[in-house]
Image (tube, rainbow, N blue to C red; front, side, top):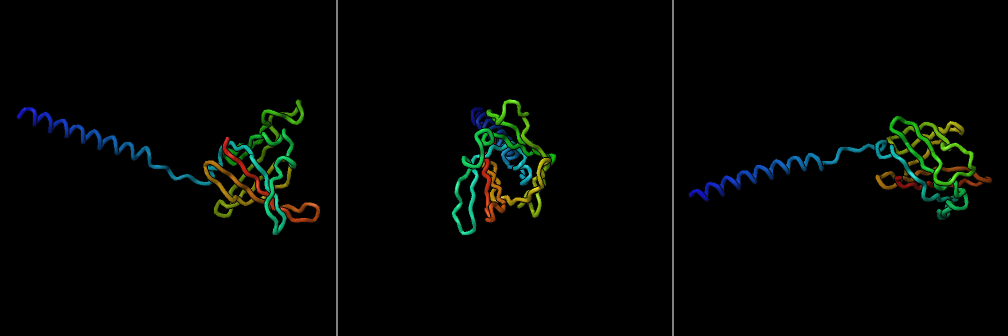
Length: 158
């Protein structure tokens, strides 16, 4: 009889312990809602640059358009709406500052577009074609030598 009570008490304690652990696990494992601004607010490294003319196939121009010293730069979008682009391991000129450029950013149109306002350039409104925890793709158009070119910058988190 004594063994049965001990066994029943053990089962009850084990059950309560498991219920307590499962509740706390569920609370910890339940993902918090993540906004697009929260996904964007981190450091990114550009891994490709695609360009296409209307009706054309996007082609990588990453190595031909960007110098090696630009391809390793890190883009950091901060949660306060500012961003900074810092030089990577290689600088175009040894005396260049660590900060290549900086400015502000703002999501618009239900977080599907981003305005990047560089302190040195005219603000650009670009379309966010993909934004996940592992990928950022931003697309825009530009007139180059009389042709409309669509460019897509592809980034991975750093």
